[in-house]
Structures are given as structure tokens and as C-alpha cells.
Image (cartoon, rainbow, N blue to C red; front, side):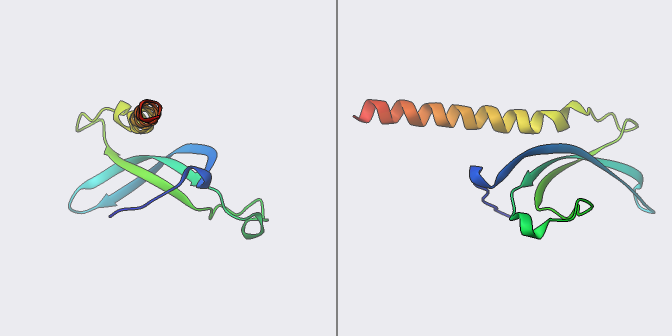
Length: 99
């Protein structure tokens, strides 16, 4: 799946979210995610209790019993930011040398 989100669409708010699921095949698992909220017109969300805003959530399954490290969840936005910063730097360097 491919999804494009432009900088103008990102809100200044992110949050860490969790969801616990129990099923017969895998037992109880907790999923952790990093949620990036998107901007939307105020008229769609004029009720303070409205939590149905648009967002992108990156989910990572994690359980202590299986030895997963929670730092993996925190590294996702850090890595995205680092790679974006490199791309912007490389692009501006290329543009400067093209002149």
C-alpha cells in the first residue's frame, strides 16, 4: 500500500497508542503505535469530545514475553525524520551545485 501525506497536512500533534487483543491462536498481545495526526477543517471537529480526527498510525506488535524491545516503536519517527533531513540536505546541495 502506498499513501502520500504532505507536510502541510501534518498537525503538530503525535501520540503513543496501545491496543490489547486476545484471540485463540496467539493469546493476548499488545500492539503499540505512534500516531501522527493530520489537519482537517475545523468545521468537521467542532465538538471537543470528537476523537475521530484523521491520523496515520504505525503499529508494532510488542510483548515482553517474546523479548521485543519497545525502543523499536520510538525509533520509527526518529528514523523517518533523519532520512527526511538527509534528503532535504542532499536536494539543497544538488540545487546549489546546479546553479
